Length: 278
Image (cartoon, rainbow, N blue to C red; front, top):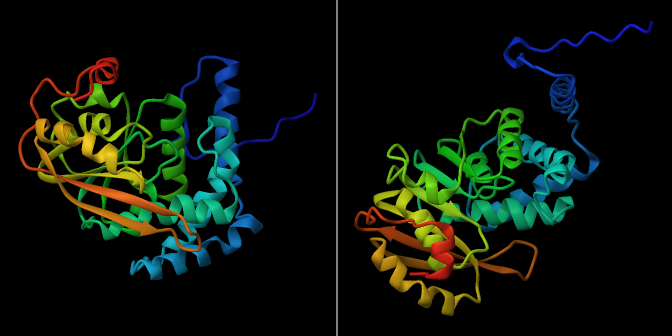
């Protein structure tokens, strides 16, 4: 009989399993984590990020290079299994994910702030923000179990501290320990702004803000969201358009300040939001 290789699994990673399928699943996840080697593709990724950060007047910490390279390699290795992003390749990821995310550091002060990334998916914009500004107290909220597992494994790989919440935003916002507890909420979602406001503003404390990442052709969408913003206890503080380094692509950050408590009945069920938007 062939002798199996002995696995030197750290004690902190020991788990209780109840079936062969679980054993195999655990081994594959552990094996992947031990064998992430920087790829040739990631060699030039930080030069793009560094140049883009300089253009944005953002000073990155010394740890950022290794973190962004490891993030890219992990995303390329594990992302396809979870269907996280249609964007691939070092240059595209560096510009359209990493630089797009850290551009928010020019929108408001993030240092030492309690930040929640709502619908985090592959970790954008929350994890790049944490890499660029390590003092952020980061919470990642994601409804899909596979994605939250990816995020937890990614943060372990990058040695990043974060809180992971596997829940729908409209339900989590009614939990007392999460409602109106955050300085900043961020979201890079495809939902219209009036719906995003109802999902995100209930997490923000009075005096804090919500930053919605949008395309520059959203003037009508912003106008339509004014009623929702008022009802939910907020006001638009600024609209900032910025260009992605090395491209002709322009994106928009809508900065919404919380000026009053959100009425308790919001957010409503998602189907109700879609049927009768504020």
